[in-house]
Amino acid sequence: MSEEKRTEIGELGEFGLIDRIKEKFKVSNESTIMGIGDDAAVLEVTDKLTLLSTDMLVEGVHFDLSYMPLQHLGYKAVSVNVSDIAAMNGVPKQITVNLGLSNRFSVEAVEALYEGIQFACQDYKIDLVGGDTTASSSGLIISVSIVGEVTKNKVVYRNSAEENDILCVTGDLGAAYLGLQVLEREKEVFKANPEMQPELGLYEYLVKRQLKPKARMDIIHELAELEIIPTSMIDISDGLVSEVFHICKQSDLGVAIFEEKLPIDQETYNAAADFKVDPTTCALNGGEDYELLFTISQSDFEKVKNHAEISMIGYMDKKEKGRNLVSKNQNVIALQAQGWKHF
Ligand code: ADP
Ligand code: MG
Image 1: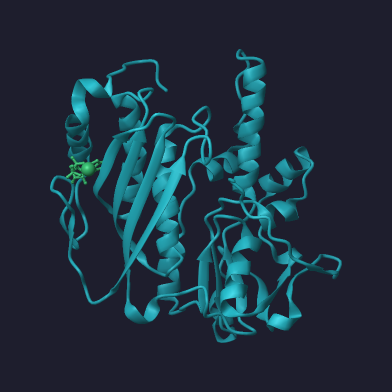
Image 2 (image 1 turned 30 degrees about the vertical axis):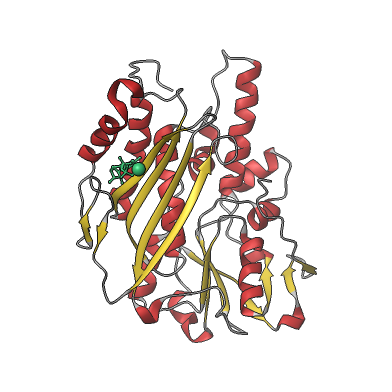
């Protein structure tokens, strides 16, 4: 936390703090009738479907403030929620933010957190319409709830993939996981020798992927322009394999993924070599990429085949065929989900 100015939250009081937050946030969505300031936010219900989702981030479990700047944490807390709305093929509209704050946190620290939340609200065109603020006896807890909307016939679930559908993924995989490894390693170096400045420059992209993930709303808008409605979709928070298993289980299908088709950034390859881990394993099981994993019917193949940000990595198969990885040397290996274990 910044050493500069420190205002205790007690000096402003909870309401003073909320007023400061409220001042900085302007409402931009038509569906936001009343934002921060009354007992409840008021939203205009449309003829669309309303999406509602929540994600909670807990210090020491989901983030470590020794390398997570508060602005980034605010941005990330919003992004992970937007990603869930994107995964339903929806558009985010409003969020509420619940905070558990220990007395380690000053007013300036809370403002830094909200700066990141504000950046995210601008990027994703969403309104902050409320929240709750409470004391926490241990670490920082930040829980964001999000409201989104989707046209009735465009909502996409996990359970509607069909045999022979093409499995697609956006962006690249494994970078956020390796970014975390870089940050953890530098933290150890830093602990051992406080004079040492962390060397993050080499892996700038990976670290950014870990600290400031961006939800793929760009893809949701492009799919709409291309008139593609995925047959199923999920966002990748726990790793590709774990997510594809959700689609398989809920759609009652098997899957084949081609190792050579996995999108992996050059920096991810470099860091994987550095950390002596297999880049394919990072792409398959690394968490927190917040990319979209979706299936499309074969008839949409032409529309996505040249898209720079969409990789076709496999296809949905009969359940009896199992869930397999076809390796670069054509071995068929059963996929193993490792997931992201906090417990
Ligand atoms: P109540 O006691 O009725 O729950 P609060 O005093 O907690 O009301 O909140 C007053 C207003 O400020 C409400 O609109 C609430 O949603 C909003 N609010 C409270 N905490 C936060 C926060 N951390 N971020 C954004 N808005 C908040
Ligand atoms: Mg309250």
